[in-house]
Length: 313
Image 1 (cartoon, one colour):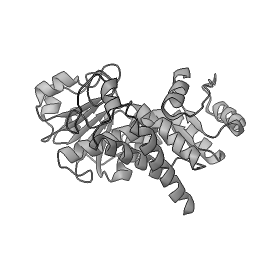
Image 2 (cartoon, one colour):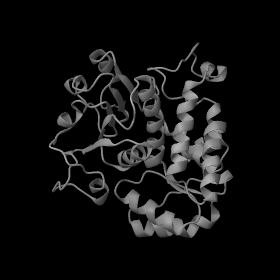
Image 3 (cartoon, rainbow, N blue to C red):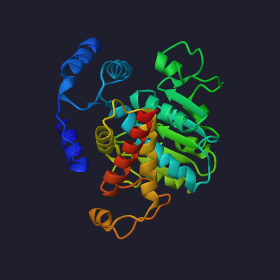
């Protein structure tokens, strides 16, 4: 978490302090953060597992008059949406029409599901280690899963993936098998975000389907979904606007700004950082580099403007 503070400073020139709270009790944690909050302009929550993370964030947002943001949830969701916006544009599909499977039902998965719905996604199947999260499933459920349960005859991930357009994995390694990928629709989009080993390795995915667009959480493959693309600038924009919260509109604004950067010619500085000659918007480049210097200005400004707009309402 000391490293997280370094990233805030390095990428967005935002000062932060790493504070560890030695408790697994929700009430104790919330009370601790509430008591120290007058010192800070905003609170970034980190490394809190589901479902406790949802309750902690909800209660702190209700109690505090400064932004509270759980990066494991919303940072992942924002960058995932940014990449998906561009991938869908490349394959000429609309978010309202595509069928999406999200494998994993923890902090990041629930946040991704909710942000995609706010962007217009209508056909999402959420899965966990027990399979499809369907209406009235009797086991391994909580209110956060219940919110996104659907009526379906599908029960396994293999069933759910058939004839879908998008697979988003925030789960475990190697769970997306070759046959599953082959069962997806034309131009499948795969975000295999488990680290360090993704749900399917990009090399295997590309060998299996020449038309696949794949992103991972790793820096040694193209299309890295990296939270540093957004969280420093989300906070910088929110702090500059004197916002009291980071709402869904601000998250969507950040995602749109990140997506737009990838469509513009990349800076010489970023190319030098990656020791490459060129990057062009396309299947191998749907998400900007974390070292793209435009992120600081463009994502920050997008969040700032949205925060100011929302504050006027």
